[in-house]
Length: 387
Image (tube, rainbow, N blue to C red; front, side, top):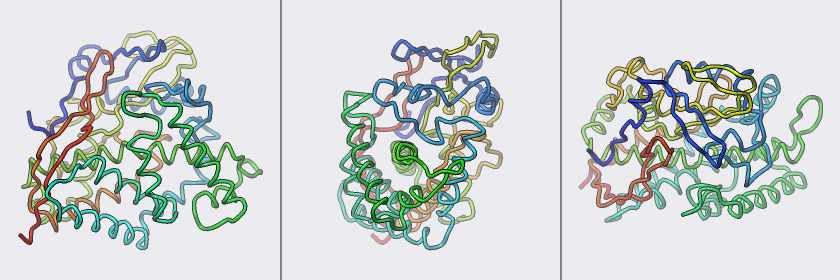
């Protein structure tokens, strides 16, 4: 098996029953594995709700480390649409030329620096700084703030050996409290100030609502972007011909990004809470139990994708759910896509090949399944086209 390969652990269960089982802190989860069931479940918010107790729809559950609702992620229609309307224009900014220029500068600098080194640990010294520095563009925050964010590590709620770290979450909360107060006293052009000025249902957003939006912004696009960047670099290390393919055919960059998102599925699943007794794949789902929409399994469904376990950069039909589906489609998807487009373009222009030196895989324990989501660390050497 290639080092960059992510096997599909869900195949047998997806074909045989369509359902997986996972015990999560004594709050079991029934995992929807088939593409059609995942999409139907994502769309059916009346039966499978997001607006449950804060933290319960996340897998693993975060109810024991937070009581702050992440917005609009943990809100159902119709309020969901009203919250989203406040911030959606801001999250479309990655399509604007000045935004793209800043991202390009950050990514080009990162690759140029990597090309001067004999070894680069991609997760912590390339992908994490890249994600954090790109986030300054999304938030319209000073570039220097990224150093603080880098110091938090790859996940804002997890630390090494502790999948749910309440102390680490408190670091983020304290930071956000300070930034929100600062925006109230001295508004600027950043996202905090935008939210301070925004209204919901005829009133100003509360501090908790602003904080809930910002927690989602920091948490939702952190390890997912880091995994996507890291896994893509590992893939190109073992498939240098793909970099050449992109160089010679830049028109496939958009489809290549979508394919990498499909194949790597950086977020394995997201939960919902059942509001009424129902049935899925001939399995009972009782009210107030949890289900999950397993994006990673849906993205390998043979009934939808031809050769689903292959990366086909110019794949024509690709209805993947790597950014979620329906009204809860990922708010940061435009930013993530633009980051990946520029990354692929710059790698193809500047890098001839990438050598993997050593690595440690990151395996997610899902009870019934063990899924490789990427790497805890991977050391590589970037080789320049100019050598």
